[in-house]
Length: 366
Picture 1 (cartoon, rainbow, N blue to C red):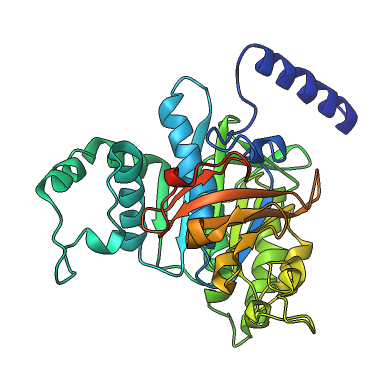
Picture 2: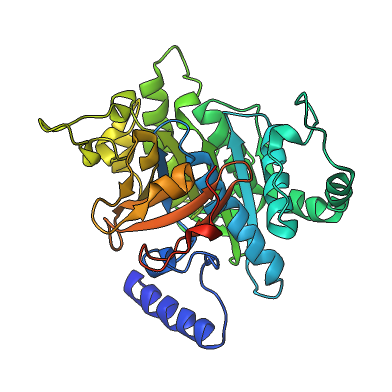
């Protein structure tokens, strides 16, 4: 069957799945606005999530590509979709990453606001309450299930090491072919193949790296080389050869955070918002990705209303307001924005109603 025939067959098969109430990607059930622009988590896509420092780029990545697919899978166990997430946590330990998931779970399930750092009762005047500890202790079954779907890796930091770890999973869970014949990839001398087929076509494999500016350069090369090699070589292999979903967190350059003003003293908003040109340490990674998402916190620049005309009152929302932007989308609409409510202590995001209908009393300034 030729390539065109494959496209027709896949279109027909997916149509039947949807008509029967099934799913052809992992949807974002709690993000209806973004779901009208991006279909959800698709196979064979490369995503970059970017923002200035300490804005929440890790948190929005976790919300969209870690917590959302897990929530969907737990709520829809008969969907037929399978999930495996490899989370290469370069910025924090595996323990700290899991603590952030615990905090999010407590907030969503019980409306308990306990930041990851407060779980261990290390603050002078803040000891975890007994009822919170009881709730925490009740999650053993959930986190056993979590560990079946998510691997948090904090001891591999170099580009090839990450790729090698993922490739080993591909070898164990699929078949490689060359000219129609099976290639034994467990043999180190066999490196050439032209096709890969996963054993389970319903499994979605997501590779998250947070963040790429913390990659360890190899062979005495620079950080720029490390990011460029990881993106243009290994990320594209994982996307194109294995059809895995690759998600990289990449910070904006330091200059992008400097507020600039007009001659009248007004802030030039577009100069401080995240952009493809503003990627830090290696801008060329932006050429490789399919989708680039940006997160912006206008309250950090003493902006009282955003957008400027008929926007949100940031004197009420404060630093709880975030704007998620579709900076780049090679297969759809770019330039769209989604206003979000953000709680950094519990890694929680929620789409905001319009500025004309919002009830600010429902949203707490942090």
